[in-house]
Length: 181
Image 1: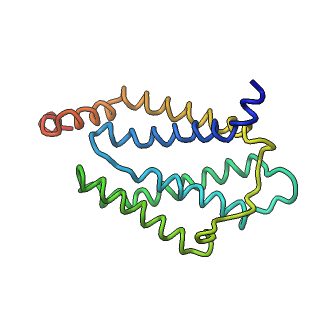
Image 2: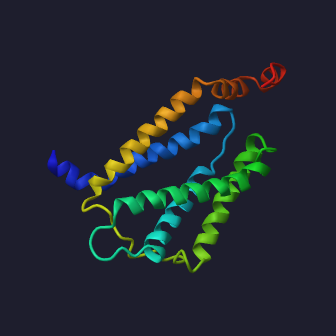
Image 3: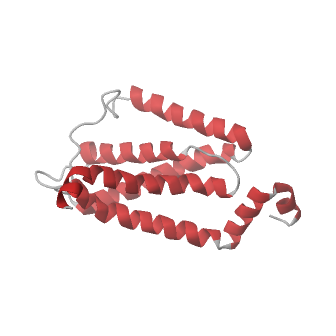
């Protein structure tokens, strides 16, 4: 079993983080809308964390402090949230395939911007990102709680008034509007 974890540790962490990303895709699907902007915000958060860890914070040699990783995650979440508001307000007017196309365009624009900015390393990317853990498997200490909190949030959201309203919109938008949703 130890050789399995030693061999597939990166894959296991990637699977857990992909599950978190899948939950973000599920949220607009609760309302019957397809928004594929989540991977763009995921990438933006990754770039922000990488830029902060390589260009802003310089803790010195050795392992990168986990407290700075948590701070980077918080900053990345705030910046992604602000950009989400900027993109989301105009997208509120879109439905169906038009929303899907607009969010695909947003992700493509983010990709082009990332490939052409010097701060993101262009097509080469960002190198020398300090690691907070000595092995990939230790990232599970951040990834698993993040997944569990995300799952708890989605499960609780489905049972709230807002969640029921989103589900009603998905099932019948006209009937939901008639009921005041």
